[in-house]
Every structure is written in C-alpha cells, then in structure tokens.
Amino acid sequence: MYIIVVGAGRVGESLIRITTERGHNVVVIDKDEDRCSEIGQKYDVIAVCGDSTIKSVLEDARARKADALVTTTNDDAVNLLTILVAKELGIKSLVSLVSQPDHALMFRRIGANVMENPASAVAEYLYRVLQRPSIRDFMSIGGGEAEIFEIVVTNNALVAGKTLDGLKLPLKDALIVAIVRADKITIPRGNTTIRVGDRVTVFALAKRIEEITKLFTG
Image (tube, rainbow, N blue to C red):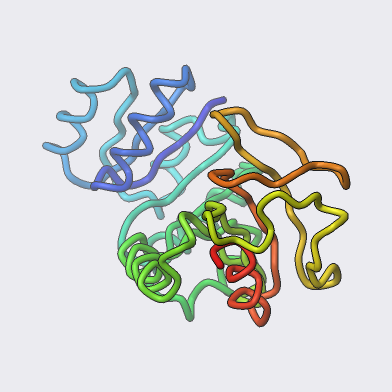
C-alpha cells in the first residue's frame, strides 16, 4: 500500500515503523523540518515538510496516488481539515487520531475511521483491568454496549470440563468466539470441551459480563 502518515510524533513514528517494516510505501508529512529530516534518515520513507491542511502539500506527497492517509497529530482541527482535503483528492481510506471524544462524530460523518487518543485508551484499559482483573484483554464495541474479551479458565471454573453445548451461557447475550490451548487457536463447536488453562475469547453484552466471567473463574 501507498500510505501517507501526517504527524511524526510518538504515535506517528510508531505507525511509520510498523508500516515500513511490513513493506508499505510511506510518505510522512510534518511541519517540523528537523523532525522530517530525522524521520527521513531513520526510516525508508519520503518526508514532506509542510502544513497538511494545504492542498499543495498533500499533492507534493502524491496524495492522488495514495491508498490511505492517517492523521496522528494531537490537534483535532488539523486532523479534520487534512481529512477533508484528502477526501477531495480522492484518497479512499482515511483514518484519524482524535484527542477529544466529542469530536469523533464529525470525523465519522466525513467518512474517516477514528482512533481515540491513546492516553485516554490506555487509561480506560487500566480501569477495566482494575475492575475485572480476570480479563486479560478486551475491546469495547458499540460505545461500550458490548465487549470482546479474553479470559483464562481457572481450576474453580464452572465451565471447566464441559462442552459448549453443556454450558448455560445466555446465548442471546454471549458467544464463545475462540479458544487458545497450547498456543493453538480453535474455533469452538458445540462438542468442544473447555479445559483449565484455556484462553477463551468471548463476545458479550456489557450487562452480562460480570455473570459470564464468574463462569470461567469460579
């Protein structure tokens, strides 16, 4: 893919590193000349120094040929204007970091995928870990109405030794998506037996999560 990354800060550089390591063609736009020079020397990218909200700067980055553009600055106004210009230039895949959650809807309305501020996301993750320490990883869905999470089956778990058909899960509110056992992932069926130590990925409505986690932890 040909990807334009706007902003060469901490998040932007992390994205630059990942995308270049995976073989993508990357152009970076940043206002800071020193930062552009540093990124250009450190990674196999083209660095364009300028204001990404200006059409000619995006054109210098060959935006009309780009498959995707990602804005990673901490200024929502800059990100939003950049997305609007990029959309006008015909870039199909538009992604933006959003610092203020209240602004997310504006980005979505113009067709951009949104990632909330990493600091807020980390804080939310830490809170969830404190709230439910048995859950190893999670992702909120539908504004917090549901979650996909991974949980480890303990010795005291009510589900240990039972098949999926034998579980008393609230089927309308929860679904077992995958099981990892000995580093091998399995898509479970009705006759799949859950064992102690299994890492189970569950989709569940938020209102049933406490009830469901108890089945896996005792």
